[in-house]
Length: 370
Image 1 (tube, rainbow, N blue to C red):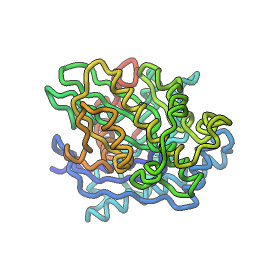
Image 2 (cartoon, rainbow, N blue to C red):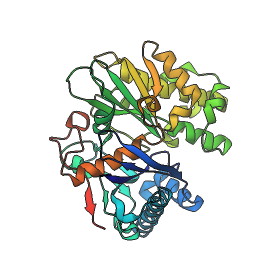
Image 3 (spheres, helix red, strand yellow):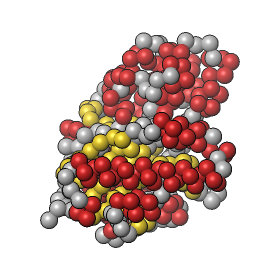
Image 4 (cartoon, helix red, strand yellow):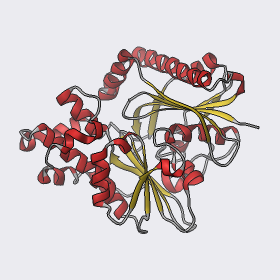
């Protein structure tokens, strides 16, 4: 029998809600419907304002935002059901990542906050919803991120080959799947698209740099790149995770300061592409076992210039997208949260302590019955 699940994902880039409807009855997910639903302009503006100034949101505004996000996630889930010509009663569960508002795994106490009221999702859709995936891992001493490596292991491992699965969303995270029976490694390498999108938004009022064309028109500043690469986070040993709390416009402008503030804007964009590629390549090169193959997912897979720079910095590594492994790069993360919802309902762990640093494997998430 089919086992239909919906995965909902909105990441650091705040591009929209990635929604998949998949059949998880077999070892490999069967994708039945997939779409990215744009945030309304007002809701996206509110989200970005909150993410850029997280200490300034009131409790009233936070409650309203949580409710509005829940409604938007519910709409996205229902649209997915309708596009697959199914009924809500046929769906086993929704796995909703929510929208991360603040991720502080090194705070005392550590915490991570995702918004998007799962009660509303379950009530509006009539579908059992699993959400709040990160906080159980954090309660056990973990980073609460990344959580997709367990899914990558289940779907993409290949005996005899050391693979890296690289997600380039707002933040870039990598899963290292060893050829032999060794623990899986995974962590956030640093910025993915977040600085690129932030800089082009400030300079040209565009949401992203299509194909990296603007960056390719500039010239990388080696002195600026050297300064950016001195960021402490990059040299921290895993387990580690990060977000907009670190890599944001304030961080970039602080590094530009008077010394680099007069660089042409396109040169800064070119340097940010090189910084993103170099931070990823450096993380892989520090891995004790050489990576044979790397498969890229997330929006960064479409930045042609960024992909070229990655290949140039990792000449011995074959680089492709996850589409060659059977799952389109747009839908990997949303499918992962559908899979994590299934793990939760079956009482199976969803985290990998070797990745997050948690004291033990654990079932993730909270269940909101239909």
